[in-house]
Amino acid sequence: MDEVPLISVVLATVGRRDELLPLLRSLGAQTQRRFELIVVDQNDDDRLQPLLRPLAADGVPVIHRRQAGRNLSRARNLGLRESRGAVVAFPDDDAWYEPDTLQRACEGLLQRPQDDGLIAWWVDAGPAPEGLTEAKAWRRLRGGEASSITLFLRTAAIRRWGGFDERLGVGQWYGAGEETDLVLRALAAGACLRHDAAVRVRHASPGSVPPAWPQALRRARGTGALYAKHRLGLGVVLRGLAGPWRQPIGGPGGPAWAVSVGRLQGWIGWMLGLAPGPR
Image 1: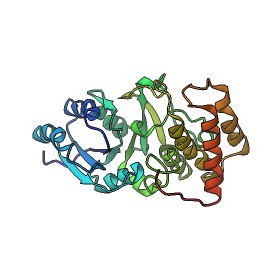
Image 2: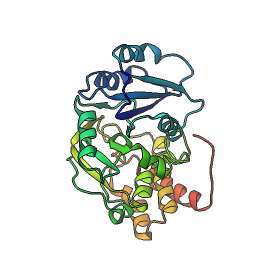
Image 3: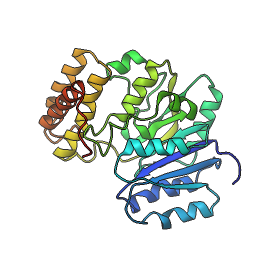
């Protein structure tokens, strides 16, 4: 395949092998064949080589890059710099696509040249969202679902927005929030992002396995950092600190104390300019 790809699929991965198979198989089954796979490998071994060979043998351009250290946002930015497609996507290493996902994403953006990107439907997370994203709703953290696995963005646009903030996300003390931060920055810059339920992505339901308490703390710090970084309203902050206590102790938000304390740590830590090392 010598054509310039329409879409670049950036896959950052560490510590997994068999979990990647659903995604890789789904890429091999795509009806849209003008794509490339950019793998940013944070492993210390060669576990990925046998998994990537079948796709490459099938004519899919596979670019394999190594990254020392574990930082999801940095890995995705590395892949973004390598991307040749006009559109870029960021699946998790345990997510997967339906056969027409890439085709529908490309068609959706081709039909709406005014849009800077689209937000796909995460089928396993709930009902399909609709319509344009709105900065006002997002600043209340009521903008809907926009996990990184659902983002299909014009490459030029996300580069203009500066990519992912490498202080946020898996592998960092502020252990989440990187995709929400990206959307908030994009909307503040006047971006047009639209939910598109015709583009479907798959991943296990986020509420199927409650996070362990340390993980809940790390993820919650990322949310707290967003309060400070984007100067969200006090009402949003207070709702976020009190809200977890309405959930069962082992519910989808994790232990209530861990979520509330983590958000408080992230909010205060970011305001104080703290940048603890990776976690």
